[in-house]
Amino acid sequence: MQKAFETAVAPLPVGRRASARAALVDLKDPARTTLAECFRQFGIESVLLAGNAADRLKTEKFEACVVKLGPAAEPVMESARTSASNSRIILYGLGGSLQDAMSFSKYGINAIFREPLERSAAVKLVRATQMLVLHELRRYVRIPVITEISVGMMNENQRLAATSIEISSGGMSMRSAEDVAIGQAVEISFSLLTLPRVWVRSSIVWRNAPGRAFGVRFDPTDERRLRIKEWIDAYLEG
Image (cartoon, rainbow, N blue to C red; front, side, top):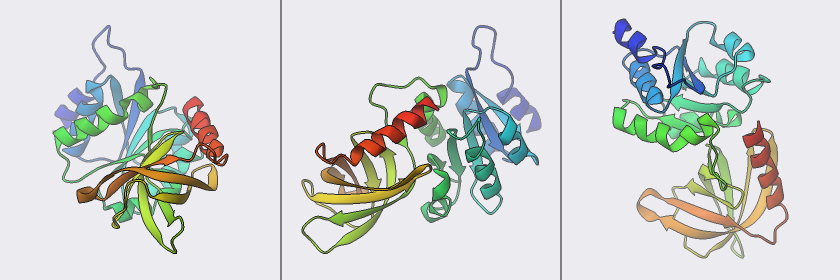
């Protein structure tokens, strides 16, 4: 199994130089081999960090980091997010529930690999986030990030809790246990890493009832949305 992992993280063939590195923190097989192969498929080199991960994340530059969710994850995330080199690192959690991920929301986890890890699902997640890891950004980029969202229904004395999926300068997608209606006016509030809590008027523009996922568009007349755009621009430039 160790031999398989060494093969998975071996240097790319000549002419296919990796342009980004992903730190795999204290991961065990078969997960580490599977993830290394998935990242390698998109030209991302995997580096196994064991024992001294927090120290290395303070001094070495990585474009992505995968850490198993649990008590040992916090010092690793703290080290990455407070590092001058890695404060904008794409942070993946491995395993755990959505509630587990929310307990680390202040560190801005970008996405989660579910356990038991399935190769097809892992490839799909890496494909969806590779542009951010490789810094090959689209004009209207959407940033995957998991944080708590408070959704207030305009003209109604009702507020519901949601969890973000992706955010852009024009809107965001999220998931909630409650159902919503397309066209409903809302005011959402949330905070993200270096972005203090912000409130912005929005409208619900799509919904997926079975998964309770929905998307909102920020009100273009609400100038508070500019704080979100500024944060996204700074995140991408970082």
